[in-house]
Length: 436
Image 1 (spheres, helix red, strand yellow):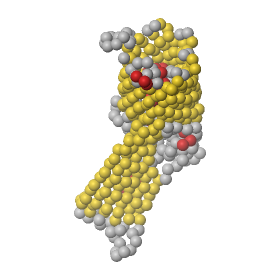
Image 2: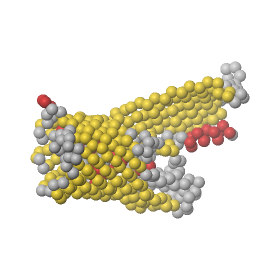
Image 3: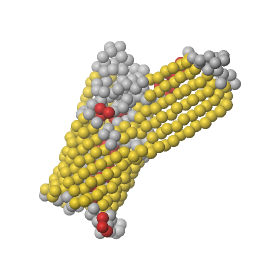
Image 4: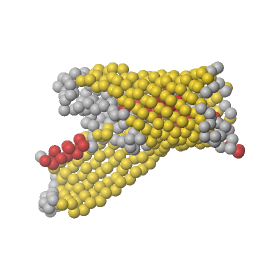
């Protein structure tokens, strides 16, 4: 009986779940993108384009360097008809992160044809984080580890003709694999042998872009971002010399982002720059949230001769299909050049929820989200006297508002019963950047 309790405890302890996205995907990269609700695939041509649309890098005329900081305050609310149970609600915590990046056009025979962009996204609260919450706890996995991802993005653009540019890049993430082998004596209460191996394997995920600029005041862009993930797999083998063998294995996906295709266009007229488009997100390929965990214990040491060992414990939780659906996310943004040194920005984005109703045993909650962004760009000259190009300071504030979604359980005896989710997430972004 104690061994069964031990096995079930292991499964519960390591029942981590992935987050679907980070602030880069939900809000955009940099203060300008945050202010325009992520609608910048056809507009940005500095180092931010390394992530948003690599093709745009080739339209830049100068070396561009910058850095920035973001703060995300989550103010979500989960209401429960029956109040708290043995499965308390879990709400996302606040996040703080920073970025740094540089982009540069090439000279010589590649002038106005080739450009490079590199950027790094760094969570200030620590590196990539994976949480462990029981699937029966009401929670918002889409926002739970928002921003907690260390990512490096590098892209290259080629512009064969003045009106057309192609771009390709990659974001690099790290997967965790390893193994551990332990031998212990139950009777002597001591470990007789131990070894462990852990590997961090990096993997690159593609970002592709095409931008057509038929006139100076028009741009049309198509962007593809490959589905990416942070996976883990850790097997543990314990030789209990007085009993038998214990084998424990946990594997799964810690952070997952869907395949994304974005079609966008931008038009400049007078003091205005208006951009819009839509993103298709392939959430139907979303993997199961719960990890694959298995525990087996046999009685090999208790058997005499060549008798086949029996399994005292043989437990495995098989992942359950999530049933998520693909969504189409429209976006609209605008910039207004009020003065030579001041730009005002705004944007709106709508994301239907990809998750089905949480009317079963699992309580992964979400609802349709609308993001509103506002911001400004200020040109303050060249205070460092390094070049003739001015220093730019961008500030943005965005709010993602969840519409209320109430779900009743199919099973009237469910311990959590009906849930209702709503609330908002606030994003403050500051970027300082300079041309050279």
